[in-house]
Amino acid sequence: MHCCWSSLRRFQACAVPSFFLPRVSAFKIFEIPYLFRDKAHAAKYPDSELARLFSSRIEDAYDVKVLAHFLVAHNVSITSTDKPMVLPEDFSGRYVNDDFESFAPMWMNVKPAKRYSIGFTAAAAGALHADAQLDTSIGMLQNNVAQKQYTKFHYATIAPGFYTFFYTFVINTDVWNNLTEAQRAGVQRAAHATQKLAVVNEEATAIHHIALNEALGVKLHMQTADERDAWRTEFSDKVRDGILNRSDNADELRAYIEMIEAL
Image (tube, rainbow, N blue to C red; front, side, top):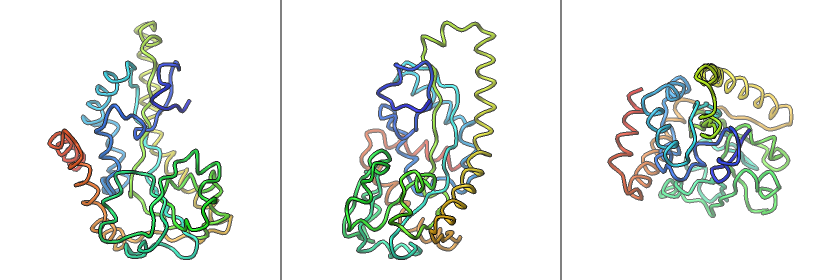
């Protein structure tokens, strides 16, 4: 079951997006554009020392037992009404929904006419369509169909790794503490196997949703290596520096970023 941080203790077990665990502010680093070199690099995180460290932080902050970290989305979609977003300067003068507060420094040079912060639930309820000016939206590829973006946004640029979305699977400590050692071992084996399968599922999900968008008439642009380099140069360090500058533990976050880079 999917849940948010405020309801963790109401469920026996659930999966929660890492972005939605505000008591562990270090997860902000996952909002840095192109933090991971590619999907193979991102797939190393769930079994990494950093994931184990973050698991400990989550357990202390929320009184839960972390069982796994699932790679859910590596393919980000930038939808637009009238043309694909190819170069960083294509965002200039646009009305952009970018959702993350940490993206604000990203627009230091390339300046949208207006920024929006419309989350998944509001977007699924039609908020992306409510403002006639809004012409560009950044989000997970999977969201395009769920939010019926294809009825307004007829172009989509697929940017692998613009950010990477992980879910953390947790079990209530009251439940965990009442399991036998054999039961715990079985649950952990299943969670670890699912963690590995999640990488395969992410790829299958991306292929499925690319086909869905095409079938619905969306014109897709797959970001090239040169375009990725241009976007990374323009956006990545600005977001990274903004996160570090706003943090009370900048040195710690730098160390975490270095741990990811070393994977």
